[in-house]
Image 1: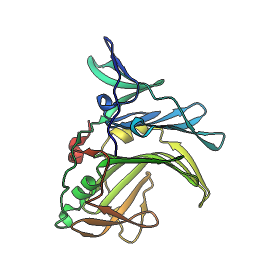
Image 2 (image 1 turned 90 degrees about the vertical axis):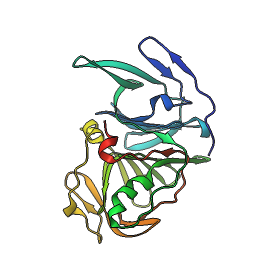
Image 3 (image 1 turned 180 degrees about the horizontal axis):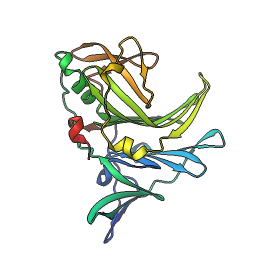
Image 4 (image 1 turned 90 degrees about the horizontal axis):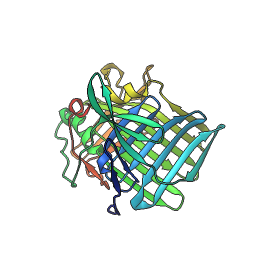
Length: 281
């Protein structure tokens, strides 16, 4: 869509602070047990657990989006807020210096790098042996938009999938770890905020072991894939199973519907493909 407006960085001796316009300095997926953030060149999506409930922020300065959704007293409140302040710090772990990211009072460690790039031609699915790679690669990127009080942002990295959607009838905000192979996608939703007026669902949770879920490799159990059903594993994983493919489209049995993953989908930001095992930190 549109390019970044400006960047304002203040360098200090041991840390620096960004006042939310060019986020590229902090690009990546960051997590702790009570917070998570995905940051691209132009997007900062941040989730945090607070004493009164879960809340999520979406900052996209180029779209004039500074949204905060809070779950409190069994209800969701959506409001416009001031820009988030991002601060990088250094902590010492076992004698080794490690960078961390602070947003508010939450300090997170990086669990995945994100490398942005120019738009590129994504791989064609030539056989079923290409399905796992194509599922990961075709989803890569970020897209966003705003129409009045309706906000939409989707960020898919090599290891995670994030959504921030707010409209009159639905709030759907989530962070999920994902892994793919030639049988389909394993989707593990570690943060979920949902208000669905059609179904009556009202959900807000963050997994207590959030950091490890975000940081560690997911273990796919191929016996769980079923092309005739969306399979829910007792550990919380959801299996979206391969149904069929063409060179430009893969069909999965998703939750209540067929998911169509398309090679030619367009994004506002593009990310470099990195094999799943190498993309983790």
